[in-house]
Image (cartoon, rainbow, N blue to C red; front, side):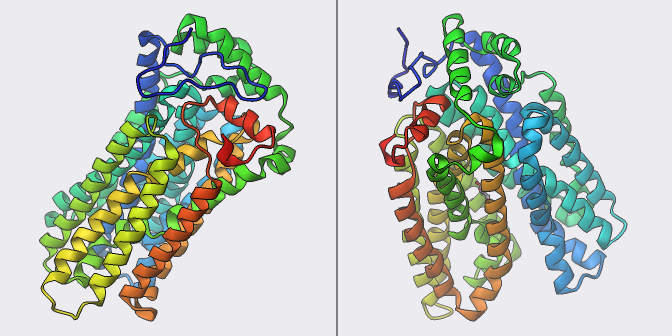
Length: 477
Ligand code: BGC
């Protein structure tokens, strides 16, 4: 029968879908190609991280070069988020029409265009336009990369493989901080943007050497080509069973839009959109975008100290995402998610306390740095990777990319709202109450996850779909 790696449960059969063994890892030779495809598409994640991180350092020089008002500065910074909304919205239909891999090739070109456009921008308007273009690539790649990886991955290690995208994303943020730091002395902000061309080219070229998603091929009626792809990435005795499962599952699905509105799939829609919003309204990007500002609030006023602390935050983000990647297929998505949200609520409570200490109190800076690190670490070990993973797992094939596009749109919209309201909140509510507010929201998100989020560990995508179709509650998976 099938072989299951230690610590990985066998996938039990779910209503309507027999366990054919594609929950187990394929022969080692096929895995090489799966890993290559994962690494290449994770470059999309890296560009996502790089492009959102790079502006934090570049803006200091752009502000001077283009004599930006505060209002224009905000627009330059948030234009990328606006673009990502466009990319998230448009990517759903395109991922079906063009296919996952071909859409990623298009985003690679758009990433490159955005980078060159920003680097050469003669003025503010063209810079904003270039950032919207880069944002569109980010919005699409943010969900199509996990989607593509998820559809290629063997169920037993799908969590690990999809999380590699989040590792690349967080690494991209750190790389952008370091690039900003390196170019800062020469005020070379144009180079900060231009460098993204390198990973964009590697991304586009790499995608030429990896296969199409076999699931997408089946959904377009190319079962023969899907069988050929499965033959390259699975052990020979697994191909027929996995293909049969995909076809069986697809045969029960209605056309796109009616399937999206199906009452049986409502729990999946609620989980996707709910987690998308939860991932943002618990405040992570206030730290990613404003870390130096927060450290300045806490009394770390020298620029090198604030930059160093920001790099520290970025490194903690990468390190704990790596830990999550190791655990996600062993202990499962739910324990990581619940532990993550609990840790975030707790560290936000402490962060609020730190800011309520009298100003100039010596321990404020230290407590703020430590609790901020704990907060980012808590996000990284759960909510960060688990959201994108679950989003790529919980929808039936026919609507997967469109439903993901809705969740991703909600994620970027919430991201934008948090980004533009954070500084105002700290002025209106005060700093302690702002962090406590995110803490209370984290508790709400914990309850949401506890009651509504399913455990998808070790299940094939087709088994997850069959679960919804059987009308069973999420937690019964
Ligand atoms: C989130 C981003 C965030 C990043 C930080 C991602 O999972 O979607 O909004 O900036 O994690 O690591």
